[in-house]
Structures are given as structure tokens and as C-alpha cells.
Length: 356
Image (cartoon, rainbow, N blue to C red; front, side, top):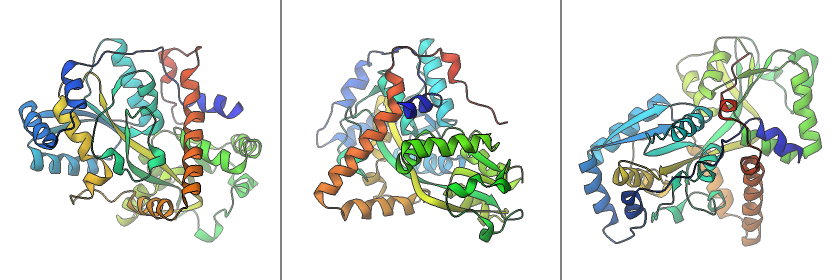
């Protein structure tokens, strides 16, 4: 299928890297007693810290670390990178026999890649059944969604007026947008969802023609928004709405719009080789939407989209919900199919694309 082949250029994995879980991880993962939380908190306090590879913004990481420390006395240590860089780092370290991370928090296709490499541990968490959208849960249960981010296109308000913006996707092909458009290069699921919604033939043709129109690439959602603010790229497709809102509130010349509502799912997962298993399991529970509804003070990024998704799901008839879930599973398979191909590319091909 041509869509799967195109997606494979964005999302690749190395040869199978399956590892055996540590006994401590298995013990924590399988426990479901009434005193689960108490046992996890006690064990986490003894471990003292937790190493997380995450795509959260620095501000969100600071808030998260402060809240987690205040609640449980556990220090969160972060290595921050884009979803592509996190995937690359995990696979590189695993090939070298290093298991540095305890938990992950990043985009679902990249976490699914690691799950298919047998690097993640299924956690018997009581909070998983309360996720915001059941159709986002993977069948193997080795990660769970924790947030949705709304994807929009950002534009520089010094260079463009809202009235001049394109109202439909085909309008992006007009000559006046030549070399004035940018695209975030890691938006695999955004691309797949758009192409599917347009029809594969029409969608692929649109993006091919956008390429011919000399659109420009950028790597990293926050960095992409920064390039719009700097005036380097007047219009950038597929950035996070909360990045635009945050910078707009600080007086930056940026705003956003959208031709079609799109969102991407971010997830949390635990390593099979976590050296701080109690803290990792506690963090897994803590990041679930149900658990987060019990505490305050964290970032509101993506909350509007979360409420929209919940309302849409709760209002659907059972047959509609089954169709929604089937559609979500189909999109996930389309994105992840290249990961299962026998002829996998070498690890160096995971290197992130640089901005033009």
C-alpha cells in the first residue's frame, strides 16, 4: 500500500531487540491488590528517583516534577527530545546493552515501535480502563494514552492577515504559497489521518504537489513554532495549538487556524528493564487521565481537545463507537505496518531529518 510505504520513511525500527523483564518489574507489573498504591509509594520512596524520556515541554516537566516530588517524595529526572529522537535513543542504547530509562512519555507511533521491539512492560494498572478514549488503547496493553494534542497550522501575524489564510487544503497549492509553507517532519499520524480522510489517491497527490511547491521542513513542534515567530516560515502545518497559545500570550507575532480538526495521541509506558520499577509503575498510574483528574496544577495543554473527544465518544451510539474503534485500529496498523516488515533498515536511518 502506497500510504504505508510513505509512512515508513518517517517511522522505522531496527532489527528485533526483545529483552527479558527484570524480576522486580514483573512483580510490580502484575500486582493488583487493594494496597497497590500504598506499596508502590513505599517502594518508590526507597528508590528515590525515576528516569523518564519525554516529549513534554520544559515547563510541563518542571510542573510535573514538582507535583510528583511533593506527593511521593520521588525525584523525576528527564531526558527531553522529540518523539523521533526518543525512539532513536532507546534503540541505540538497547543495542548497546544499556537500559537507562524507566518510563516513557511521547507520541504513540514511536512508543508502538518500541512495544513491537518487545522493550515495554504491560502494567496491571487499575486506571487503564478509565482512559479518555477506549479506541486508543493498543490490544497488547504495553502503553496507555495520557493526553491528546490539537494540531493546527501556525502563521506569522506580521506577515499575514487571518483573512488571507487558505480556507481549504487545495488552496495551499496556489502559487502565492510557493516557498512560504512549512511542515513538521515527524507528524506521521497527522499525515496518515489527513490522507485517509481525503481519500488515499487525492491525499497523496495533494502532499506530492505541496512538495513540488517547495514547501519547507522543520523538525520538532516547538522549534517549528519558533521558526514561524522568527519570520523564517510564514505558515507552518501541523504544530501544537498549546505552543502557539503560550507564545501568543507572551506577545509573539503568531496565531493559529485549522482546515480540519486533527489531534495526536501521547502515551506513557514502562521499560522491561526499569531499575526503579515501583516509581515507574507509580508514574504510569499517575499519568493516566483518571488519576490526573484527582489532582490539580498540571498543564492544561490539550485539555480542550480531550473534552471534545470525550463528548464525541460518550454521545455516540454503540455501533458508532465500534466503527470509531475499528477506524482507529486501522490507522494504527497503517502507521505501524512498516515496523513489522522483515527488511528493516539500519539504525542510522532513524537519524532525524534536518531542517532545510
